[in-house]
Each structure stands twice: as C-alpha cells, then as structure tokens.
Length: 140
Image 1 (spheres, rainbow, N blue to C red):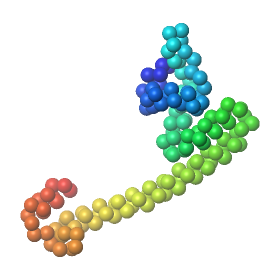
Image 2: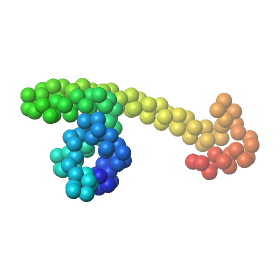
Image 3: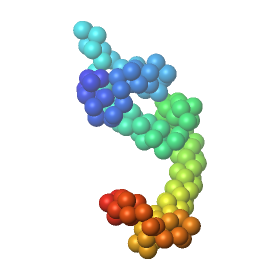
Image 4: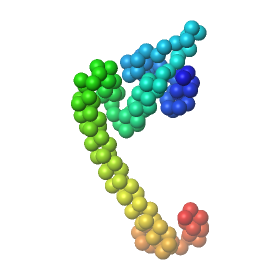
C-alpha cells in the first residue's frame, strides 16, 4: 500500500508516517524501484495500533518501548502486556474524569434550561427585556 493510501486509511499525514519511520516506530518501509514506499500489512496494523495508543494519550517514548519489545519477540510478551495494562488504567482514569466533567456540563445545561423556561436571569430575577426572551427561545 502506498503512503497516500496508508495516510487515507489511518488519518496520519504523510509527514507523520515518514516521522514514524525515522523515529523507529515502524521498520524501514521498502520502496519500489521508483522510490515509492510500499507498506505491508504487518506495518499497517502496527501503525493502526500506534494511532490508537497515541490517541488515548500514550507518550511516544512508551510507544517506542512497545515497538522495541515487539521487535525483540515473544520473550517480551509479559512486559508488553504490563505496558498495555498500565496504559489501560490511565485510559480508565481519564474516562472517569470525563464522565464527571460531562455530568457537570449537563448540570449547567439543565440550569440554563430551567432559567429560560422560567424566564429568569442568572440571579433568579425575571427577565423583562423582550429581546432577551426572544433570543433565549431561539437558542433552545
């Protein structure tokens, strides 16, 4: 698969794919006689995993450690699993924080909905300006 195809499939820019290669996150990509990179299935699968790891907040240094362990073979399965388990715990912690943050946003939305429905200002003072009331109705 060409770099353009891999870029379209993974959402990474061509420059990022080249950077992954230069940083050793993926092995050197074979090239055609015309110098065009040709990504094999195993490399594409690794890129897709790296995209997920990065998107979920794994530092590049840990991604590099993971790739190095993959290259070292089966003897690193336990260490890879521990690295991924630690990362999973970080993701779960972030999810809990996001759920709490979402609840706070929902509470604030509910607060404003109640004010609008009751025709009140933030200080529980009735809104007397008809333009404000019209604008409130339009945005709900």
